[in-house]
Image 1 (cartoon, helix red, strand yellow):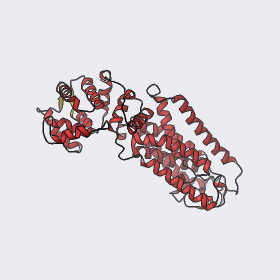
Image 2: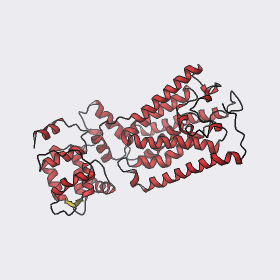
Image 3: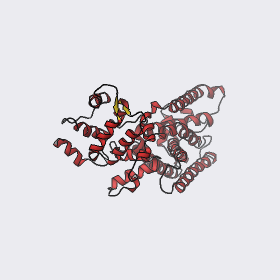
Image 4: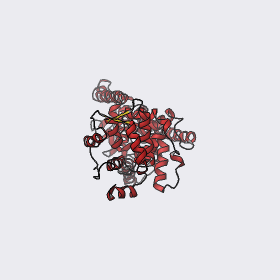
Length: 407
């Protein structure tokens, strides 16, 4: 083994990436370190294990390779590789599974192999690991909070590098707090800001008279009715959204969040046509509902502490926030005839979370485009958006809805 490879091994952490595994395996037959490469560049390494160009690697040779050089690999990754070798009943590993291993991307066939070979996994569970640093304990805690399978928790623990960090939910939260502070200073009001006559005159909140300004269907998320509204939403958004983003990434969590926000405002425009909308409840309820549904669906596999109590507390917080919104909607408005903000956005967020959100969070390592259920729910969601757009264009005039005056 070359000195450069030894240096990589000495300084590698438990969060070693799968590309590093590829480097270590290649060193067994070559002194050149394999660079981090796209999928098509793994072919040269695969050919070294497949001299007959059959498209498969014998599990016997793969297992012998791991047995001889297993000490050079991270222990958790070694368990996964052995499970893959032992789980293939046909005695061989195909090229795509090999690529998925080396590039840290797993396919359905890989998952089936892991499930078949799960009984071969030995050693302590991730929770029994000792000597971990603070950051490693945090990653382990997040793994047990969000993932129901031990093999997934180990894979996530080893592959997480905090690059990029969970920036999306934090950025949205900071922006929402900044907008609230701005309006609090401008209106000189922190509780029930919505009762101020200038509250709805900004460019951000959704108002039925201004529904042609399409950006308002999303930007209303940065406005909140008061500090009591902001506080509950921020607590749920940070406590649930940040761990989910650490596991599933900003793209997936952003998709669920934005779909919840858009569904919330569109649901209001269809079901509560005269009411304005403010607050991030649509996006927050989409994330929380998806997470709670994922916990219930995988109840026996979820190993987080006090999960029943914590789930009850999450439902209490959601109920309190929803009850506050319902009370505010039917409370006599400070400046009639404009009603107070609607609560229907909460229901739109829940609907997104229980459908599209559950599919997105179900298998964190599987590509969304490989899940037929994702496309079904995504098409249903797209159909709802199109119907709501047509409703906004034609229904208000056909039904002769009497809208409140422009703020």
